[in-house]
Every structure is written in structure tokens, then in C-alpha cells.
Amino acid sequence: MWPGLTIGEFAQLTHLSVRTLRRYHDSGLLVPASVDPHSGYRYYTAEQIPSAQVIHRLRELDLPLADVARILATEDPHARAELITGRLHRLEAVLDRTRAAVTSLRQLLRPDIAGLEARLCSLPARTVAAISGAVDRSEVLAWYAEATAELDAALAGLEPLGSPGGCYDNELFTLGRGMVMVYRPAVAPPTRGRVTPRTLPAVELATTVHHGTHDDIDVTYGRLGAWVVEHALAVDEPVHEIYSIGPHDDPAPRSWGANQAGRLGDPTHPVPVPVQVPRLRASGQSPVRASLRMP
Image (cartoon, rainbow, N blue to C red; front, side, top):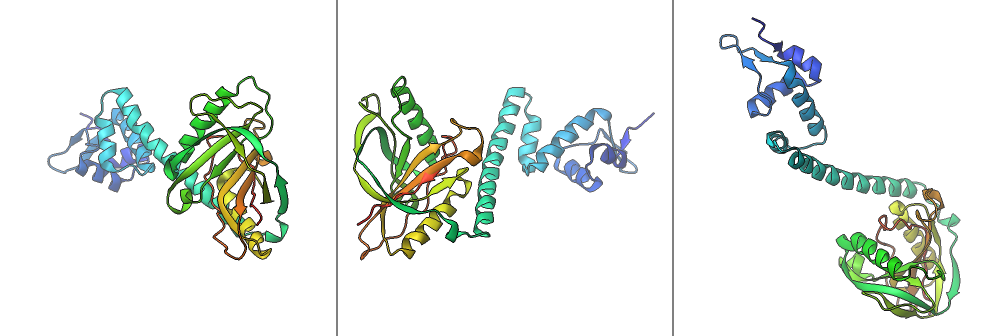
């Protein structure tokens, strides 16, 4: 009688090492179909190959053995899919953070402060429809996405007067929680839900433009901060951004641009330049012109 696939044969078919298969047996994760009572040889069946391949893929995702066992023991396919999907979402978040860090490091390894196009400009007072609130930094992306969707709905059918923007208090980055405001210019802003009319005061700004995704926008803010210091200016919060072009306008990330802003204060009492901003990937609007109010 054919005893089944030897552990070596099973290892070749599943790309799992003999050592790994022995460990899975000892932990109860993948038990051989039979074990010879005299020799101790392990034997597997062809029906166990799919399970071994699933385990292999889950382990490649660094899923702990206990979690793999729980997934395999879950007979409900929907519950099993939810367990795996939750892990995939966490991995995607890690990949996003890794990609952003890699992008920023590449920019930092190729510093080009001299090539930064920063300038001083004036913005007149503007009437906008706005949503504001105190937000935890970890929740800013979800809050931003909900707020911009609510603004879009409130201003549906009205002719746009300019680019949307955002305003972020420095405490959002220094303390992890701060006031956030997103807005869209409008002639007669409605009052609907969280949307209220606001008047943004006229300001003198030092500005630059960040092109592309927000993965390395902190590098742009850092270079703008260096430019401000070099020109003996000082910065007062909050950070301002104007989203000129984003994914809603053009799917190519290289075309995206946003205006970044932080108010300039009294140069005799300088404060740290607020060079960090939330990565608003959820909004799809990335290019930023940084602005700082002059004394």
C-alpha cells in the first residue's frame, strides 16, 4: 500500500523546507497524513498541497503561526476572508509608510535648496465655505476625506472661485492634536451641516510649490523653512495649503501641486517653522504652495 508523499517529495512540491514542515507538524499547523510508527517517517497526501501553499503565502506576509492556525481552523469562508483582509490592510499601511520614507530619503540625499522657487506674495481676503474641528493626527486623513466630501456636496452646482485649501495648527504636529480647517472659495457660502461661511484675512506670504504626491512633502517644507531662515524671516502658525491640481484634475502624480503656507511672525521673536503637514492622500490633492505671513 502506497504510504503517501515523503516529506522530501512534499517539500519539493510545496516549496516548504523539510525543516519547516517538521516545525509545522510539531506545532500542529500542518500534520502529516500518516507517520510510520517504526521509522517515524512522515507522509503527506496530494490533498494537503493547497493547505501547505496557503500557509506558505500567509507566512510570507509575516503572519504569526498562531494567526495562521486560526485562519486555517475557520471554516466560514467569509470569516476567513475577513481575517486575511485585515492583515492585508495592515501590511498596505506599512508599505505606504515605507514608500513615503524611501521617497523622502531619496530627496534628502539629493538636496537642492538652491533650486527651490520660493517667493513673497500677497493674498487678499477671501470668502470661503469651511469645515473646522479639533482632530487627532492619526485621524486627520479620515477627517479630511469626510470634510472635503461634505464641502463638495454643499457647493454642488456652484461655480468654483478658486482652489480648495487647508489650514493646520502647529499643535497637530507638535502635540498630536490640533485645529484643522478645510475650505473652498465661494461667493455666498451656504450654512449646511458642518459647512459654514468664513472670511480668510489678507496675508503676506512666503510661498513655494510642491509637485507630486505628499510622500516627500515634508522635504519641501524643510527647504522652505531653510529659505525663510536664510532671509531672516520668522514663522507663526498655522500651516496653510492650497491644492491647485490633484488626482481629480489629472491622474498623473507628477502634475499634482499644492500651496503650503505658514504665517510669518515677528522676526525678533522667531518660532519653529511648521514644516510638517498631514499627507492628504485620501483627498487626492497634493501640490502645495507654502505661505508665511510677513511682520
